[in-house]
Length: 153
Length: 59
Image (cartoon, rainbow over all chains, first blue to last red; front, side, top):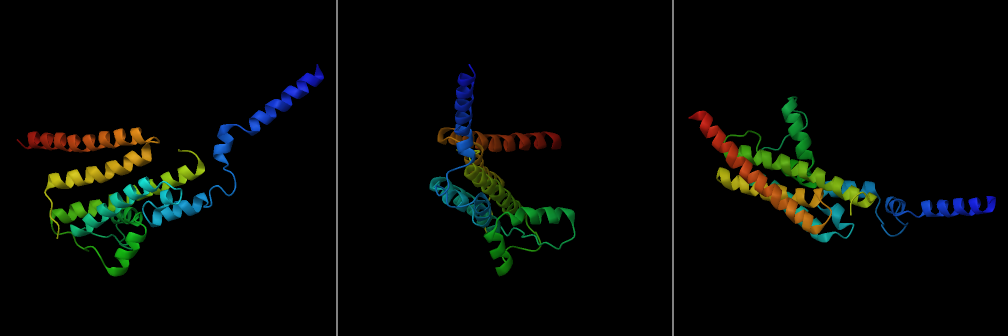
């Protein structure tokens, strides 16, 4: 009786050790070369790169095209690029949104793209396009991170 | 300078946002497409509805 209980508990512990949930949460070493943190940062810096690093190239291309087009259209409409040290709360929130564009924001700050003052209606649309592109890129980077951790297929 | 009409801006905004929402909020390809189309329709129809509400308030 005790021997059968021992065999049963051994079988259960073996079964627990190889559940699909655990294997998804802890992927085999070497099968995925990039860590979740690297994928998160890469997806933030370049839209879609986090997905590309995991072989999801169609999703990566669609994300890259969507976010880059939205950012570019915002610039083409003479949208405003927020800076960090404005002091106004709404401007600081706009800066956080803009920062989501990653390398696109760095380039725009470096080359002085975008307007400082919004003077026409389309420039206001453009400002919103740039902020929303950054926020969408945040979502995209977190999605790539979730893919890497196995929370999403 | 690119100066789209308000409706063109809405269509562009809805298109790009729906693509990202579809990819990030669903796991399977068919569900992604369906959710993307759903979001696009909600964005556009919601904007048209809000426009009519504003027109009614003004008049």
